Image (cartoon, rainbow, N blue to C red; front, side, top):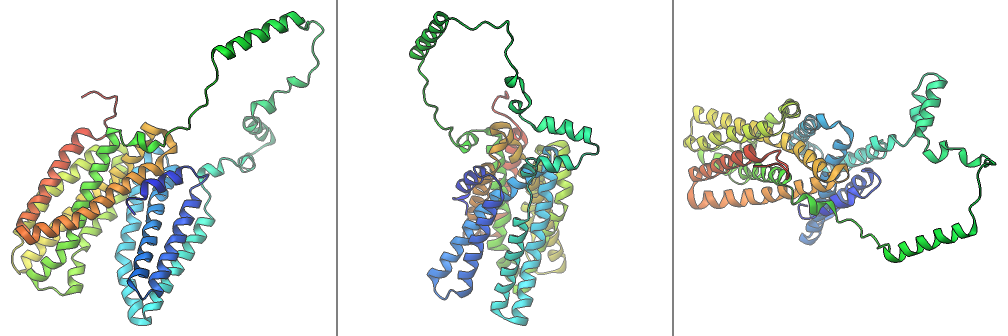
Length: 409
């Protein structure tokens, strides 16, 4: 998914609407889910997962770009907060709902529920009216007006200059004198000499905007922030369940519930996005990394089985979850601002393709790093490493977020 995200973003930016990439992504999702449903061999299951990865690469680049196209620039972070809020609900509900359906109706019924959701999403995509598409409907604009005079004014504004100008049909005045043959000959020779002197060179197609974006310091800082955040968030996927099982003797269900403190703070995403839209992405994101640093290091003090230790673990995880939300929501909006500042409004999907590439890299590196460090050095050293990473990211984000290439030191 991560490696193909920039390519999917380029394709999405060069389509007439965001609907087509989203429908293609849903087609890949349905195909991959079907293979997982009927597959009985490892090869078929692997192909199904690859197709689902392609779907995620297409949807997670076109989806945020569609949000940016729809909302105003000053409300992007808040809109991304609502996106994160919805994703958190899906993350919490899906395992519970899947488990209940599996227990009551069986394996195939779970996939039937997934196909129903894909079908509903497809209908929503087909009925979606994009903001930039609606602007091309002059009749819709005219129907919103009141009197005929206002409609006439809007009609004049919508007509191109060629249609408004009707002077071409007027007869020539008698005072206009036709040029002589000698004058026409001199004009022709002058134009010919200029053409020979300055031949017209064929224009090369512009390079993809992604090559410009990867050189922008503002975007690179945002990508580092989301990479570091993904490492911090996914490191617990590899070690937290094993840690609580060995420390508190929790069974699988209880170990799974210990991830809720990391997810619940995402419900504050819209509020954090509103603050980021008002005060900028630098301070909420920097505060998030600074808040996570002591919480991560203090996780080393969870060492034995007691009620106080369980409360301490959940409280520290909740602080880490809130800190991660403080980073993700503003930085997601910062990516859109960096792309608009560097490449205009025609490269949002490519910017979020790089965003997904950085996020996927962090999701891959986080569990690998956390598992190896805990196995070789222990839980205490792992929490110290994560805390140092968060502190270093706070320094980078606090000093460089929002800085443009033309800005001085």
